[in-house]
Length: 248
Image (cartoon, rainbow, N blue to C red):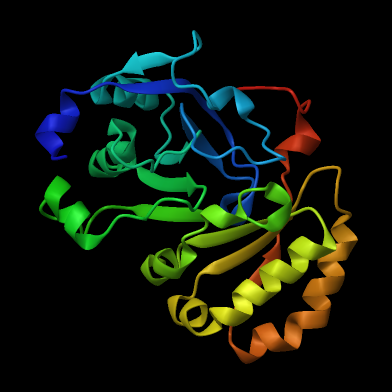
């Protein structure tokens, strides 16, 4: 899809709101969230199940310029595109992050890791000059407890990450911690070369944070040897608002 085609399209939006980022490297920073509808995965711990169905009554079908107009009202250049799954292939919504970056927003894409990140060819097909786009990824790697680990395609996606991007392991058990470490170990060279930040985030209410802290301490020498940036990431919004709260 090129820019002209995209500008004439509509896409399913669940909610647009301004708040603080709840997790990852941007945690605590003010940003505007754009939540698209529709997701191909059904993670066991998902806290946004209301985003699964892109045909529910909660959905607004918005054109790109309508979304930009809403964002402009917040007077905030930092935008998080989340879902649902924003990078779903063969969907108009896949190009929303590119469009928002083209309009001057600093865009972080929160993706479940089951679809390819943008290739250079895809970027250039959408807009000729991509050098000025401020676009970063927060890439999930699904662990076994999610029930969705078979959908990971990190072998190709890791190579497209950079030092301003991040990887997130949401861990719910010791098994998940071991899976995450083995994944890091297997891909240590490319992860070190890219300089990506690696986050460990506990499934809220399921895994004690001390389990992650102990693992990070235990493996710290290994992480330092390969110059890997690995950290604990808590979902701070769940400590601020009720768990069922939306649009916060």
